[in-house]
Image (cartoon, rainbow, N blue to C red; front, side, top):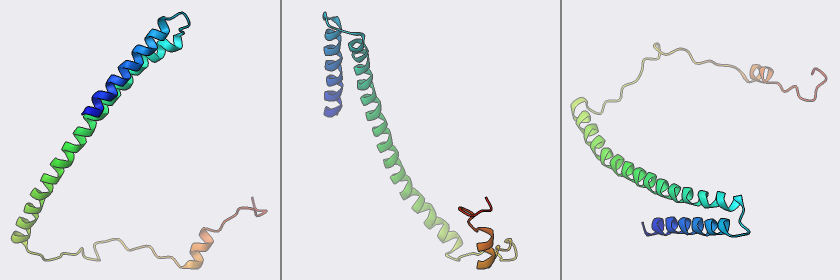
Length: 116
C-alpha cells in the first residue's frame, strides 16, 4: 500500500512538473500532454493494485473451495465406493489406423520440386 501511495504521489508530482513546464515561456503542447498523461498513469497504478487484490481474494476463495470439494469427494466415495468404471469399447467409434507408408504418401513435401 505504501508503494501505491508513493507511485501515485510521484505521478502527480511529475504531472505538476510538466504543467509548470507548459506554463513557462519555453513550454510546448507536448508538456501539456505529459501533464495530462501522468495522472492517468497514477490511476492505472490504483486500478492494477485493486485487480491484484481481487485476484488474491479469488485465490483464497479457490483454496477454501478446494477443501470443500475434497469433502464432497469423500462423501461421494463413501456413497458410491472406489469402483472404477469404464466405457464399453463397442460404444466408442473405432480409432482410425494408418500405416507409415500411407501416412508418408499423404504428407509428402513438395517444396523445391518441379511439380509446383
